[in-house]
Length: 243
Length: 397
Image (cartoon, rainbow over all chains, first blue to last red; front, side, top):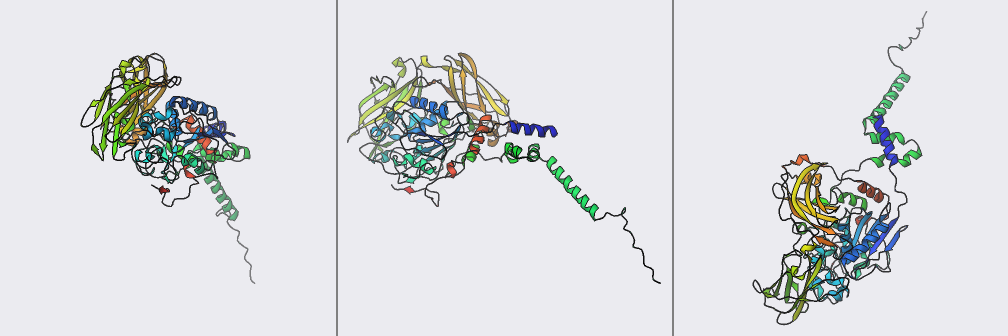
């Protein structure tokens, strides 16, 4: 017993404490973007990063950029929180699925995620809604859902929020199944494991592992553009300019 | 004469006095305290003993070394999740990140080559809808892609005329993508169909190929498009050899799947596990580096996943598939031909597997990091206007 006590004390004292770990809030933008933009969430004593992710040409390039960012900020005793918007959600999911590095990521917070791809990918509205870059034409539901194992998240939780507002030119909401924000369906934004119709991201249904709804079952008045900062706002990073 | 009686002295030796009783009770309390501490778990007792000085208290708080109570794993479900980040992380890591339960409705894992397109309306006519899709997403070697186009007016199938149809091999670098003309012919019902043999293109390595179509549905025209992945025979990086063996390792089931590697590199290999009643039990993902030659991919199915399902053997393997991940190239995943057979393990009993929760240095590191950061509240936070019924703001459509 005495030896056990001594051993336990020695072990507990030998475990290095995580002293003054840097906390980084990584912001990842959407399709056709090269970064998140000028407005980032701010948390006291922490560092916000506008991640330089090229989402104009291919998911391969974007994944490679994402790896570089995570390697830079999310290793050692650093801790990261990753805020993804739109197709940035797909980039992050793909990055986790294909790589083995044990990045220190507290969670992924996804706003209007295109992780499950968009039904607009095969239509004439793709450029109008998402922009005119090459990658915008290759983010359909099969491209993203068949492309990698979305259930392999490194054990990292992905919190998700979704909008259901109107987005010009409006007709795309008749193409997207169920509720949508004018660019992605709630099947995608809610982390459901199959494309299909949902009227809320709280509905019962099979979701990718560790994907879950946060804060609200849907934001009925917010469209895809409105949703960009919503997760950052909800998680306390912005108090003004929030939808 | 009265005689005063001498007071009789108390029989000290025969009965304890007040001080003796107090001392005895005190000793009993001390003994009880000693017994209490020695009878408890060593780490907890150790915490008590080192907690005399401020330095020791700071270095090893007694409660910090206690294992936290177990948590129930996330297994899907409806509604909003409101866990704080540390609790959420622990719930997400009851099982290892890449060896988790498999349910019969996880079709993304059970049918990994099933495409996801669905019928939807045309761009300019809400009464006309169409579906342009194919029978698979991954095409390997000499296999064919069977593409179909279906159209409906108010739910009733209608004939269409294909006005343009072609495929292009995507080149993300040069964008030199000459169209490859395709022909569609009437298929089942009113559908139009085409069979495409990408092996004829003479490609050397993995390629993403886009299929485009333009069709006339009588009152207007519509374009359609989808992509698929093609792996030519010369670009297959490795194959499953069909050799297997299984064992229980540290309380988990491990199936060693033979792999013949042509191109060395980093591989990701997925597979599903089914029990003796053919019910899905678990999925797993192997990630590792292979040199050229013969290797085993160690497919680990975590013990607690099996015990929580109450599953028993003989187990069998399904949907064994994989790819070489080469980040320097685009596409960066070179597909292996899926293993079309199966493999059956020994008749293991449920009790032969461990029901212990997953643990690792990485997990403990994350728990430590999350425990020291209170700035982010994750699902437990939220600055959204409160929704009394948790249903959110509702739809404005």
